Amino acid sequence: MTTDRRRQTPIDIYERVTNQIIAAIEAGAGNYRMPWHHDGSAITTPVNIASTKTYRGINILSLWAAAHAAGYPTGIWGTYRQWEALGAQVRKGEHGHLVVFWKASDRDRADDQDGDRESEEPARRMFARGYSVFNFAQVDGYTPPVMPVLAEAERIDRAERFCAALGIEIRHGGSQAYYRPATDQVQMPRFACFRDAVAYYAVLLHECGHASGASHRLGRDLSGRFGTAAYAMEECTVELLSAMICADLGLSVEPRPDHARYIASWVDVMNSDKRAIFTAASKAQEIADWMHAQQAQQDEARGAA
Image (tube, rainbow, N blue to C red):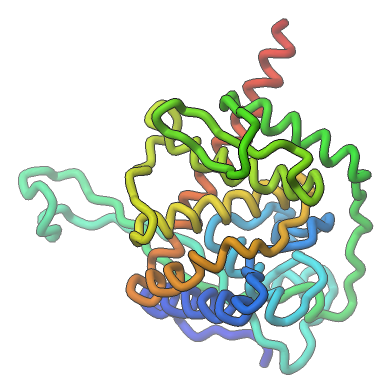
């Protein structure tokens, strides 16, 4: 039987996903290739075959890691039954890949040691649950649609407009890229300093990811100093964010040698806290949602002009 119906406890899920991502990071550490690096192809962001919706948060990273490890060429995924409903068949012997969903559960606050015992309102908690999906490369009897691919010049133009709509002040000069919270500015080396336009926008999105944490935007704690776990995971968060947005824009994300100073810290944090990468991916998704919301606001402003 190809399906994996073993019930996963929340602890199993956090540990399995985290261990998978740690293994992917360690496997690519020699050439700085992380599981979120991708080629910018038309089906880069993992998408569900039945709903046609993209996966979100930790599931994007988890399925990227699975695709990297197995060498899958596309990001089309579905459950056994979803493929079956389309007349396709998961091949015998194929193993499913874990994705996570959160289920809300009400409980009496009187049972919550941290709650208000006098309140009769139920407390809602989110529990992680897992199920298996299979990649298009694991099934027979299905032909994927041909996805249109924009010319590189059009993708670069989209990236320029996307970043401009964020409303973040960007200055150019010097040899380093960084976000300065004190002045709320992103500093970038000049465009010509980058290997190509794609590399420029990948770094710019990374720095704009940091800027999203300002108190008047998403209000993340940006006080962590280099060498601390907080600093390492903020870097991990915005790296995931950059990869997510680059995937949306059809831009590739390539390995960067400067990741070497973070890799060990990322692995250490994930080994000590099996929920850390879930938090980082959730924050990255929150930033991505905020960035996309700015595009909608910009479009509305143009329409009103």
